[in-house]
Length: 105
Image (cartoon, rainbow, N blue to C red; front, side, top):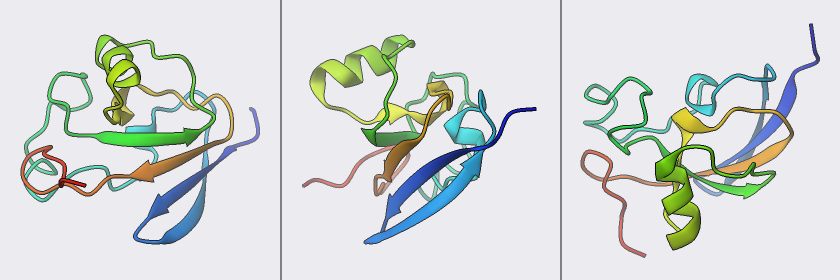
């Protein structure tokens, strides 16, 4: 068994460190990645609905999933359901309004 990997979560002007087993998906690491509605109505981690978006600030692996490749190219949040934890990283939770919609800057 390997040692857990530290993931720093940025949310609401606070930094929280969580320990995640290597190879686990960020969506399953206990992060609050959904908005009010998408918490109950989402694709279940299949990478189809786009509602579990997070911003990777440090430690991001190269995008493996088509949505994450587009996100990387155009600056959208990446899907937490498609990011396996293999090294320490800093993740920013993005605020959502309806479904997976992001608030405007």
